[in-house]
Image (cartoon, rainbow, N blue to C red; front, side, top):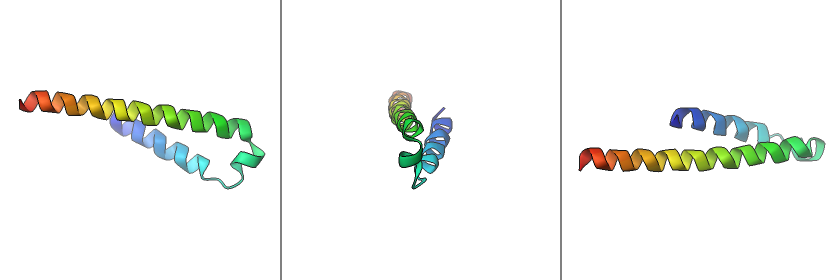
Length: 59
């Protein structure tokens, strides 16, 4: 799951890196930005869960 989220984040970041995306496609830019934030939040939650499970396994 973490790897999939990282791949999606990288894809969205590449998409958003287009210099004229904001001016030519503002709606797509906004949607991609929202999707990026959602994926980043999901990644942070998944990593936190993994760290918690790892700590329990060690303890």
